[in-house]
Length: 166
Figure (tube, rainbow, N blue to C red):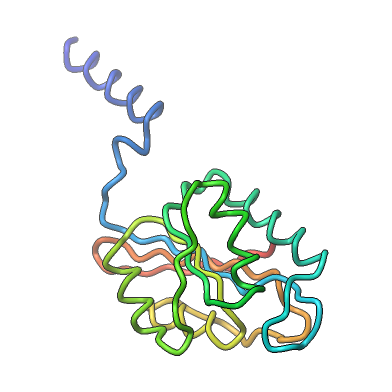
C-alpha cells in the first residue's frame, strides 16, 4: 500500500511540476524561424506592419515553450522579429554572425535547453542541417515568412525536425 501511495505522489508531483522534475535532461530544442516581413528590399530593412504582427504572433505561439535563450543576426528585421519573444520571457537577444553558423550551432549544443533562433533564407536551412535536422525544401524568399522549425537534439544525439506554420 505504501508503494502505491508513493507512486501516486510521484505522479502528482510530475504532473504539477513537470519542468522541475524533468528540467535537465541534456536535450536541445531550437525554434528556428526566418525574420518576419520587411518593408522593402533594402539591406537593413525594418519590419512592415504585417511583419510586426507576425513577430507578436510568434511570441504568443511560443508563450508556453519556456524559451530560455533568443538569438538573432544583427539586422533590424531579425532583431525586431526576436524582440517580442525575448521580452515575453525576460531574456536578452543574443546576436550571432550569420557567416559563422558553425559557431552558433556549437553554442546551442553546449548550452542545451530551449532557444529561439531568428535568421534569413540563407541561414535557416543551413542551421537546421548543421544541427543534424531535416531542412526540407528551399524557402521562397519573396513570400515565405511563416515557417517555424522545431529541431530537437536529444541527450543521446537523436535529432527530430518538425515544420509548422505561424
